[in-house]
Length: 416
Image 1 (spheres, rainbow, N blue to C red):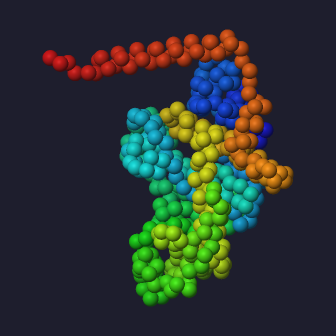
Image 2: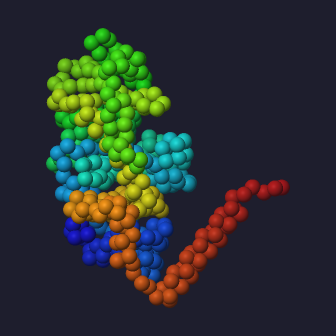
């Protein structure tokens, strides 16, 4: 917390932020302003809500501190910047960025809020270092709705690949050591993102669809058509890295593809084949320097660390449990949850790197470290404190129920 102390204009906000982060690292079953305020010993959630909405502090500067903290502990010149989006299911239409849209969280179109994240994936660990809320065009085209949610007037519409490019270039401009970028088809199929990375230049291994058009010396073909022309001897059995059940072995092959506009560098189509089902996956790859197939496979395997980051961020530090509706509040909540998760990830990496694990134990996990840390920081409050919060919750819920019933009574049509 000392790293971000100077980002707060008042000592009260700084202390409140520390209480909020400690609450995020606790064993609370749900994490929102109500539960975090009770955990901190506050009489009401007003202070936590003020911290996220009106207090004077810069979430962008704290994000930069989180990135510096992660890089300091995980610095790796061969690191991969992994980009992906995740959605939070929401009700209503007032929460910033919410609309009916596809989200992988549900696997279908739902009323959801979607954000793009950038994860620093290194040899010893990984953690999120940036975030960007996706604001659909339906919001941008409605200035009154944007203004009500606190969205800046000058904010232009940006696609998910555009948000990804902004975060990647921001990280590189800050001196973040990384050699590669990885992402799924949303990003690999976007030529503007690929061009931006090639111009930097930084290598990438980006998934593309099976119908993605690839230029070769023999002409332009869909990726799936090129896969049928690969001879059996060209496939190699390689591991994409360790998984929950051991090494993840697939068959891999690569094809040289034509450089766009005769730019310097090397381009390939990378193909992965499931050894059991035969299912194929395709990746478009670029590197300023010639690299072996094994290096492309290593980078492709690192993409899954973003899924692990989402799982840990949501399961351990409440990334998706916010109950905020406005632009500023969302950025502040997400940034502080990223900080809390980074603490767990960096502690896990340090323990595994610096302290040998006894043979009879598995290495410490972020989940186990969170349990140990929560046992050290758990505040003990009086029974009176808990009873006061019980009354506060019941009183607040009774008011909300009364208001809801009154609104329904005035809006329901008459039967006659």
